[in-house]
Length: 312
Image 1 (cartoon, helix red, strand yellow):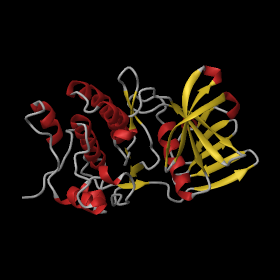
Image 2: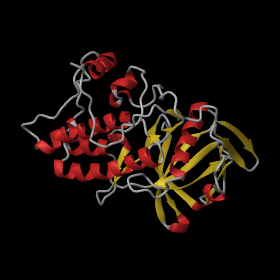
Image 3: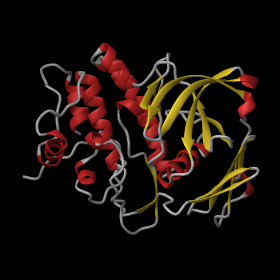
Image 4: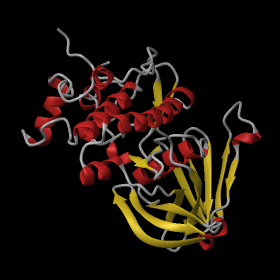
């Protein structure tokens, strides 16, 4: 019997074998005015200390495809650090003209991988600045004295699902159901309208507003679908939330995000990561994910609808 696959019931597992663009050949040019990032998809991002301007020479694009965001260093008052990771530092700040709190994601431009992440982040967010289920984008500016790009994002007061579970334990199923409804709305937009695979869905990348509205964040390693050839087979993301085909370096598409979301739902529902990470370290975990049956919630502790949702 073949090993069953974990999904969440969205009709997003395309039968098309499509290719993904991650703008691997992105180049950059620093001038007196700022920095220019040029992606392989012909999308140009001009980031200065006055803000962000995007243009494209892609066939079929109209002037409406060109966007301008005015968010400069002098408009922002920066406070303390609220997060840090491999992609950069995130600080709480206030956008003075609008009296709005923002999250300022600060990234260097000299490392090629960081430039890819910056382009992925801005490309995804520029085209969907106020989309429900996704963190809102307010602009970006360049700091010439530090050679860093500052990306202004929506400040989410409630923290991540990861921090909530660590602090308070399992999330009640009725609450979790409402949260996942918002997450699925964001994912469906990414998959169906933008043809983008997030590639790093996990509790730490789902932020919660105080009104209970979830927001997907961190699009630095997202990938855009296109063409009709092979699927992406790169090993980007957080390994413990990767789908079996990703760990095995096989082709994958939208379904990889659905697997990651399934693990996220289960972790939030039971209050702990579904796999035993103490058994064999990273290699042992990889073997569990690729060889064992997908984890399921204990039926005695959860309503049938929740168990069915995980196992669909």
